[in-house]
Image 1 (cartoon, rainbow, N blue to C red):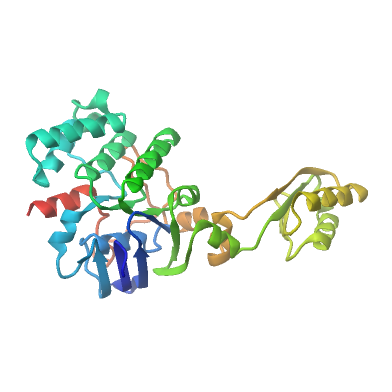
Image 2: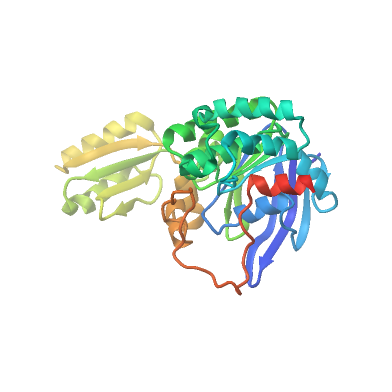
Amino acid sequence: MPGAIYAEGLVKTFGEVRALDGVDLDVPEGTVLGLLGPNGAGKTTAVRVLTTLLKPDSGKAVVAGIDVLKHPNEVRRAIGLSGQFAAVDEYLTGRENLQMVGQLYQMSGKAAKARAGELLERFNLADAADRTAKTYSGGMRRRLDLAAALVVRPPVMFMDEPTTGLDPRNRQQLWDVIQELVAGGTTLLLTTQYLEEADHLAHDICVVDHGKVIARGTSDQLKARTGGERVEVVVHERDHIPDARTVLAGFGKGETTVEEHTRKLTVPVTGGAKLLAEVIRELDARSIEIDDIGLRRPTLDDVFISLTGHTAALADEENGGGAPPDAKGRRGHKASVPASAPGPEPEPTSASVSKEVAK
């Protein structure tokens, strides 16, 4: 039986760009699926299709048991959405923004007011509740937008890079909110470029690149695909790299990689701490001075590198997503696209679905 979020063979093209190339997803009820990938991978396009804001060229999508293409209005009433960029009315106060969303979903005025108060407290916005949103910082707008997506306690939530523009404290706070939602039965599809975020929150992860799901599984399953533990050594002198490489080759279970500029060597191993002690003794016996040595498990960054040949951060820069957020929490891009050029529609926001529901 399909999960709370289900997609089969989703295809979407913009001109010559194939943003989605046969995407399949299946998210069980009450779990978090992390869509992990750089800007331009197809994550946001998938969210737009699943939230009724964009029609696919082909494929099937079912959300909360409702066919997305056949019954879009019903889907909109069953979901919450927080897009990449904060979508709040600058001329309303924080409290008024949240009450407006509640009323668009046909909550009573009393219920909308009470829910707005709860969320303002939960997102540390109570002190600014009666200020207009145009006076908010970028991080405050982001938190208000996230609160708006939670006004009606939807059974299915979509969060498209929700922590973009948040500082570490507010990012952790949002993680806590997400975990509370899921513990209460909410199903969540979360897109992110942050490897730590996917590792921390997602029950399952789909790695997306160039419109395709190139790997899926739990965090541990994906890490296992890159091998087990690794010994990392940073030598003191670059001249010691060849000898250190020879030493590691004698202990390794695969190819030793070398980063010349950092003087770091890495090799997959088995044997744990006992083997690490043996490596240290052998390096010492050969008079190879080291600055650092350690044993570590593979990370999701290792997974991404092994699958795509580059880190998520590098891919983000190559796709124009590396610029820091501006005051409104929006990221800059290295090149603009002419108005006449085909391309994805604007990013989804919580306001997008709310306004459609009100129609």
